[in-house]
Length: 225
Image (cartoon, one colour):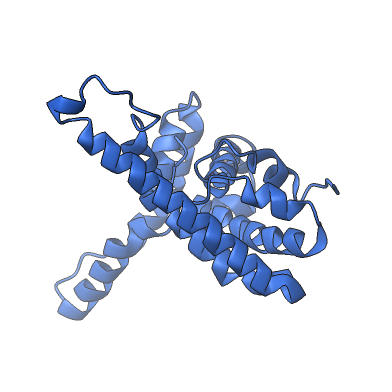
């Protein structure tokens, strides 16, 4: 297998243990960027300008808030809030008020960490397909995963063309894998529900005890904390 910086996380997280290997990769990227914006990026002019322009979503703000470096987050908030204050105008004009309303309502939907993660994730969606095309053993690695959350399954299909001449085989492998994953999860969920019938109280869980949590990951992904 050809290990390099572009596929190292794929080989690391496509290990048959993660409910969604791409969620695991995304979480690593999110944590790295979170630490970056609490450390060296605080003093970099370009990064400060990006924070001025976009700020952070609530999810990534809470990730930073949970860490020790409160001073860095405070400096980031000073930067962002100062930029937002510059867009706040005392006025009685409905047109100006409407423009401000649109801007401030949308202000929480932009996030420099979200943007950074998404750029990197697109590269990983493409790389998975490229590895399927180029590396014979990768198909077996893919088949031995537990499938993907629905969002990442969709993203892999979206970039399936990067598997080039093996695109159809790639799509077939992905869809067969995901269908089997969903079917197995449904069986566990049904048994989880059946276990709440007193007549099944003494019967074994057969691995279904965490099926509801796994279903949340399947439908919504597994987010970094």
